[in-house]
Image 1 (cartoon, helix red, strand yellow):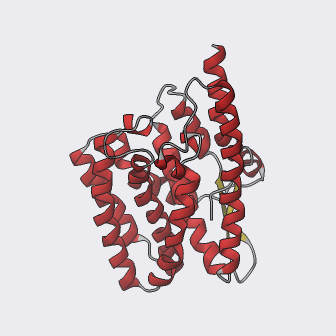
Image 2 (image 1 turned 90 degrees about the vertical axis):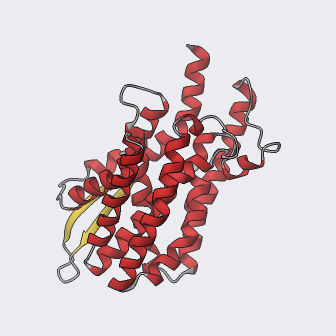
Length: 278
């Protein structure tokens, strides 16, 4: 379900041969690059978009292979438990070294984040995954895929425009009625559902309605808000479809991907320490 480091493999059922692999894990490095506000930091939008796409794409397959109960147990082990562990870790770190520790009890919105804003992704995924079984069961034939693609565009365009109005400042500072993590959710939810519908389309052997929705959403958003964040849905669709057709030999990408999620979860503490020292 969660796009943890590793490799997605497509296997030919008749022969058992692995026809290609898609490595999961490079994207958190791009997110860290963005948070450091390094040159070309907007690559973080693409890194997060790929993370969201892969998370929901894998979740659909995981749900369809499970008996339902095992799906939720596995998700709790992979997402809820790490979130609680890292919440405890960052709470202690911020109490010790931060000038203004993140106050979970006074701000109810932080219950959807934790003691560090960088942890917002895990609660988001925990709640967004609730929609995966419904999407998987509903999108079971072409007609429903068409309807789902239209619904995706109807939801994604207003949320994308809201995000364009608030970003990037609102990712770091609460603004008016749209407190964190709502700006992050405005950006992320359409991309998460896009990945789920892409998985359903792959299952049926027809992804063009979902890709057409991505083109439409990106075109409308870019026409109203001409910025890099507006074209992420079509950009990650192109990246994913290109990588899907590659046959990467060797296990080195999987080995490198194994470090990615740990880098993402550790980077706020490392950056805080660096700011304090330098």
